[in-house]
Amino acid sequence: MVLRKGGIAAAAAGVVLAGFIGLVTVGTYAASGTPQQRGNAAGLSPGTVPAAFQGPIEQWGRLCPDLSPPLLAAQLYQESGFDPRARSGVGAEGLAQFMPGTWASYGTDGNNDGRRDPWDPLDAIASAATFDCALARDVAKVPGDRQSNMLAAYNAGPGAVSKYQGVPPYRETQGYVRNILATARSFAAPADPAAPVEVSAQSAGAIYFAQTKLGTPYLWGGDGKPWQNGRFDCSGLTKAAFDSVGIKLPRVANDQWYAGPHPSRDQLRPGDLVFWATDLGDPRSIHHVGIYVGGGYMINAPHTNAVIRYDKIDTREYIGATRVTSDGAQALPDRNDEGTVIAPSRPGEPAQTPAPNPPAPAAQAAATAAPAGRPGSAAAAVAVATAAGAAGPGQKPAKN
Image 1 (cartoon, rainbow, N blue to C red):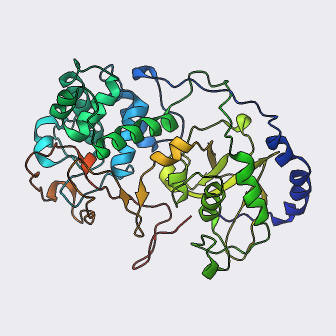
Image 2 (tube, helix red, strand yellow; image 1 turned 180 degrees about the vertical axis):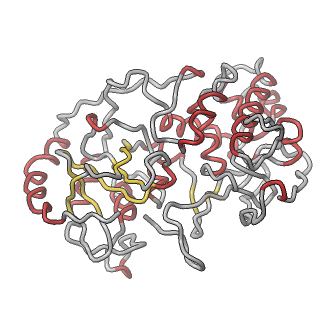
Image 3 (tube, helix red, strand yellow; image 1 turned 120 degrees about the vertical axis):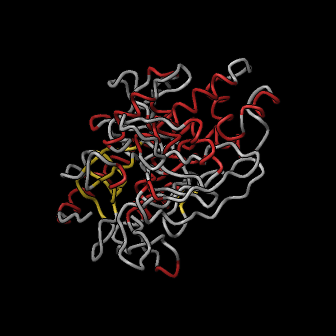
């Protein structure tokens, strides 16, 4: 994002240095937790899914009592990063990353066009919910948390959940369940929109780190490494700031968006991450991030030929904010250097090498048989997602 009002930096610096860090450090902002919603009563927080998918996820996320829209959204995000053209190296296809064999049984015509197409996002959303609810019925008599058992069945199969009478002791499955439940909190609308969101205990430290970098020249792709002369781009700065307080954020801005719940504009507190997007209805278009310091200002690494500085947040492309949590950040999928989201493997399988996105229309995509014994979900697959800021031919995606 190009932020042109650099002249406000000196005034903002005086205000912030005079009070904001001290205000956070002495704990003026009291923490007040937001209850986590379970079951399908919970709705989606605005701006957390692409607008074209919001209605279908809200609808199909209430298909059965053990599912909810935030849980379904978190699962789709972990599987594909909301990329309808995602295809894994083991043959899983589409937004929900179904193997062809399981699609044959659970594929659902979500848009009533007479076809069941794994590459159609509306069909994929409906099918993921249908499969989730079928698995929930399969493991309904297993003791423990029903949502956890359902997700474990999606990853390891209902037989494993029944055998172990709960989430199986597989690293992959336990991580899959933990990550989706944690990420679902980022997608969930609060039960009471007026209730304050709990304040991060690490806020002061993250702001302090960012303040020590004021005046540092911007570098696209910069992570502050010695060979980069300690320079950063926007998400490199926010990642390093939270690294300094023990929270590991993903590298790109549109993944950092999901690192915690989303406070409203009037609930912003110092230490929140604030974001900008080219399409306010699609979080995949997020392209800039900064650290809120209070009073309508943030610290950010704005653009080439600028320095890390204070800027106002109230501009046209402001999409919202995230209050970073340790659990939320830890749950997010990683990307490789090509911008590919790497989803968890299923038990017994190594991480897969993502296949290229299908070059042909969905109907012409070649199906790949599922390996023996593998559940049809792509929980074990690696999904392909497009990083915000599309690159030109031969270039890597931009690191925001």
